Length: 280
Ligand code: SF4
Ligand code: ZN
Image 1 (cartoon, protein in one colour):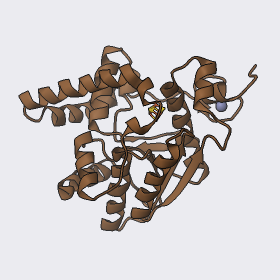
Image 2: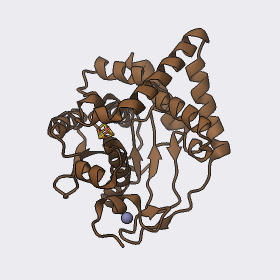
Image 3: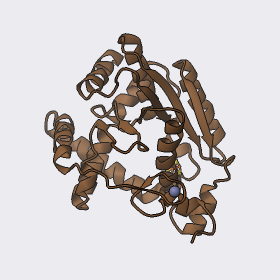
Image 4: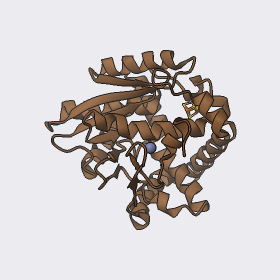
């Protein structure tokens, strides 16, 4: 199983030039099967090919009651691949998801998303990263594609590709080596290699995801049914999404946040708006 899986991932890495000589790639680990698969597959790629690049791991500890348990699993994933792990602990930095959610009136998962997106770019970049790798996979992009198509958010579709390059020196290039494999394939890959992982439901705030999670699951089920009816439906769809993304691609018009200097499309970035007290 893992040979077929790795062949598919290696093909994505090579076709889309995800890894280049001299790269310092940070894999954002959540403790789940998808990011673990990205790390293990990239490690296998490093072992199999003679390209000189560094591989590091990065984890954000959300400071919840289960975060230390999650961090332990992440540590095991990193040590099994002999990868140096950097962690960022929200609590130690005085950031509380619960407090921010209460104060801002935003759902906790939305706050979590803003904070993670900001730190997944800033922290690895400050540590010398050239690229950041995530575990986003074909099923994610297929569902995002339909949601954004129906919501008329075409510019987002422009980013549904294995490599999102950045011309902004502060914004890291994002790579998605699992773009053409699905969630089930990631799970099978982890199980075949005895890679430890946790489900996202281990997060104490998971129930807050409620409706969004249920809707996403319904989408997965519908797509899965179509795949049973029409041969290679999922594969053909993700191939089309990758090609269509080129038609919707728009260069981000970013400025620097007045407070932290990070790239943003507003004067003050959402991270600063949420985390800094007494804003003007
Ligand atoms: Fe973040 Fe937990 Fe919500 Fe997932 S379930 S988005 S980890 S707060
Ligand atoms: Zn800012």
